[in-house]
Image (cartoon, rainbow, N blue to C red; front, side, top):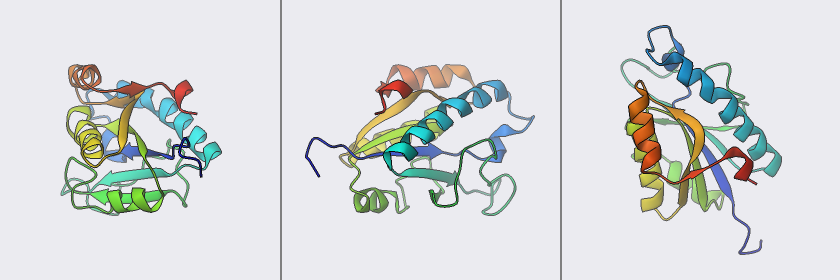
Length: 164
């Protein structure tokens, strides 16, 4: 493999049913991210780059529950990598770093939910571990748009058309 070839991984944070219920005060913003994330998934499948679905496990979302399951509108395949996390950062007390190193990943594209918590913590966790890390534009959301906007203002971003 050439040193100029970058292996990217798509980290999809918290794409779970819990965020797509009628009790989400910002449901339309969450729904608007799905086509962007699915477009990125398609690009990553074409490039044979890792796609990693990361599910938050908690008392509200116990593993295996309906709230915990990946929302059906995401283009999730059974052979995609799935990891559980119990903290904001997908790197904290998980096998994510090991998985990325095994796949020779050097760059991560972060998307998903709870911008100011999980997205930002995972983005910074990736950078702290030496990965190039960016947020996929228009692919993150939070319960309040101001938190999403803040996260975007202080973070590096990439557009879907720049992924290849």
